Length: 109
Length: 121
Image (cartoon, rainbow over all chains, first blue to last red; front, side, top):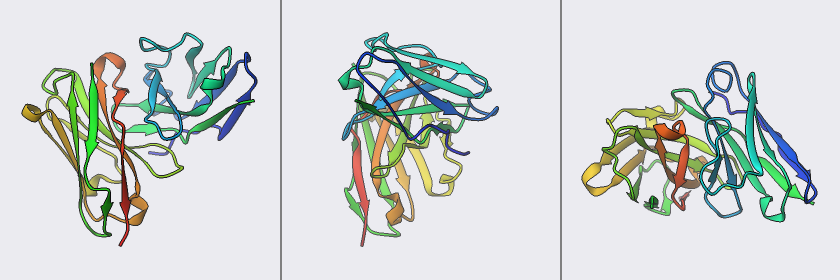
């Protein structure tokens, strides 16, 4: 099972919106709406931001949203804030195995 | 409140077997739909899923590491144990355990703090 493909880095200015893509195959991302997204600050454990493609856990800002089209899932962060600067990982669950993306470093300029 | 914590050696020698324990609270691994997984992250690199055990003792492993991994649970102690044989320096990583549940599409919604394991002679 190959890792999902994410851009290595994205950047944006405070207040702007950015989108991180996560490309898989018809066997994982394309087959199920079971993509999750995680935020990881340096030295910290990952934090769940989006599950089942577009659902937000309690306590996660509504500035974070998820979507999917075909074999590509996307995470959009609107109204960028300094604290959004972190690494972001997508993950697809297709029954087994779980497959993570290579991660995207978000820089807030 | 769900919490998980990993424990185990911080340093292992090449060819040795690594045993990590995940001790959790706030949920029971005998409850239908619950799972506990292990994920690792080499320094500066991406997350990699390793294994997961379900409430019904169904076990799933990463295809690339399956021959080296064993995951077990002790429901009475609220613990999940992961063993990895034949450790190599490339296995140096922070190892995380995480809670998973059918209600969230079996994503990993609660994570431990992680434990750094270094493989070196």
